[in-house]
Length: 305
Image 1 (cartoon, rainbow, N blue to C red):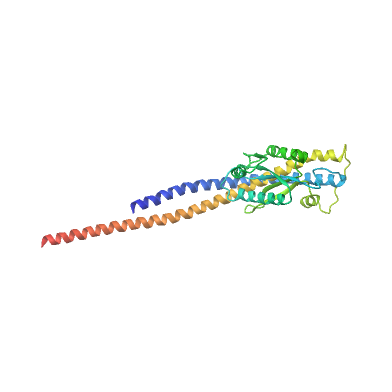
Image 2 (tube, rainbow, N blue to C red):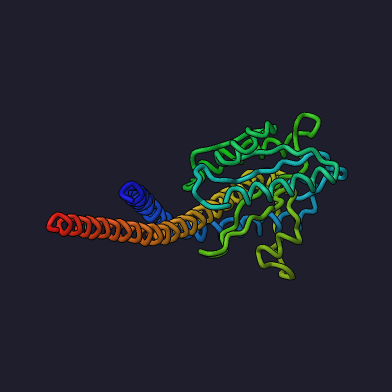
């Protein structure tokens, strides 16, 4: 019984130490969610207004441009997948990867080649383990992205859109990330960034049925769209990175809270088992003492006779 009791106590100490770590990680993630939410709230109006401006220019000019005009027979698409650099966030990265796989399968079913770009070590490791080709990848900033990070990610995507497909360019640009809905709900989504659908843009910006402003373009509407293209892609990528960061912190907080609760339940279970083992040990010792005393009394009574 002594050995069994030592095993229980050792496991309780180990789980208690783990519980302290998970509790600390839960509190850290909870504090970071607030900052991430503020960044999302600050970046969303800029992305919305920029989309509205692009919509107004495209609607007013009727010019053909990669930003708003779909290819007649698209043959190649780029998919940007946003995952996390660190684990312990439940199914956060796995759900985003599944969403990207579904999107890639749909695009291939439409006869398009898919170039995959990845943000986050989890996505890079997943594709590397399965020996899948990755056009480019970035790591080290998934939980706290900056606009400079977004520009770095957007640069090769913009270049791919501006190139001809025969030279390695793409006809479409999609992004897969986890949208932050609330502290308890984070949803993996895939959005097509380019070419911009004017109907979807009007619905997103809340301008459906609204009269957009008319512009005079100097030198031309195409030059204006050329200038807006990188800004539009950068703002959408930045907003997606911020949404994903907030979702990552929320998922990690929820996972660590669950781990902390489970550790507490396991400690209670092991404590009951340890108490039962100690009581059994004490009972056995008492029985041995009583048995020894009885045997000694019988031996003494026999010698007196």
